[in-house]
Amino acid sequence: MSKRVKYISVLRGINVGGKRKILMADLKKMYAELGFENCISYIQSGNLIFESKKLSNTELGGKIEDAISEKFGFAVPVIVRTCEEWEQSVLANPYTNSHEKESLCLTFLNETPKAELTAVISELNFEPDSFRIIDKDVFIYCSRKYHQTKLSNQFFESKLKVKATTRNWNTVLKLLELSAE
Image 1 (cartoon, one colour):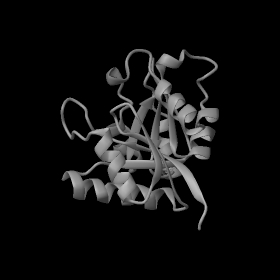
Image 2 (cartoon, rainbow, N blue to C red):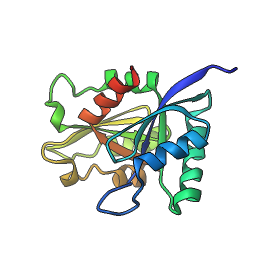
Image 3 (cartoon, one colour):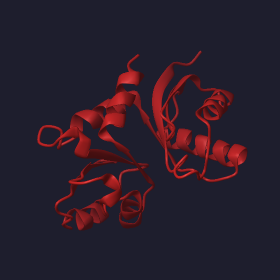
């Protein structure tokens, strides 16, 4: 039997404002039907930890997206990281020592953006908010609430030509904690 790897998947835009509603129990059942094991969900926004045979993050994300579209009838972007990658992202956050964690968010990208696109938006000023792009992660400091910043999923998707979904820092840390159990 092949070695199983633990992953974290984050789904974009489900159960927000009563739209694109998916019960976590239904999502966990779907993951089991895909052959994923030991699935744990955290809150209703589509955060799942699961084990699978080793596949690329892109393959897994595509497999989950296809299953959601087929089962629930709408498209949902899904970004997948191994638990090791998730931990590396947590450790790489350049803002954790200088800002309150309540002001931090992490935008997950489905792939590393092209360097020339990253260079262009890295020159833009969004004060008092700020961001740093490191590989497939965008670390965000929001001086107010995330919904008040211009540094949204749509902004990064349009400027970097990638898929994106964002979690607040508390959720990022909780998923890391749950993945270690």
